[in-house]
Length: 90
Image 1 (cartoon, rainbow, N blue to C red):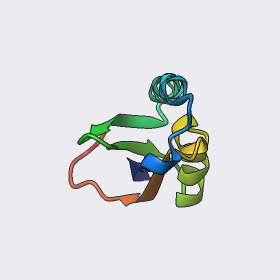
Image 2 (image 1 turned 30 degrees about the vertical axis):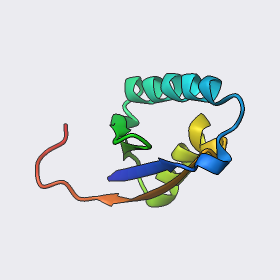
Image 3 (image 1 turned 180 degrees about the vertical axis):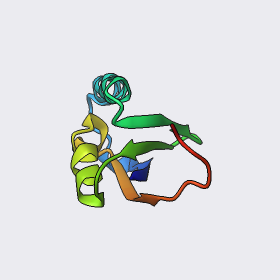
Image 4 (image 1 turned 60 degrees about the horizontal axis):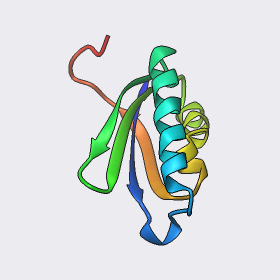
């Protein structure tokens, strides 16, 4: 199953070490892509991002996403829901 997560920066919640959090976030995304857990991720507009997660359930996808340093820092709000693709993803 696939899940689409979108996030948006919460300006009032940006931590002082935001650049460090972003660096850790990018490294985390790269590791998850290499592991086949995240199929695609990227910036969306100026203050948002998205990723496509491969997981067995919505709960598992949420658990995976909570590990993201950007989400864990509280700097972004996010939503995640099942993604129904009309074309093969792999």
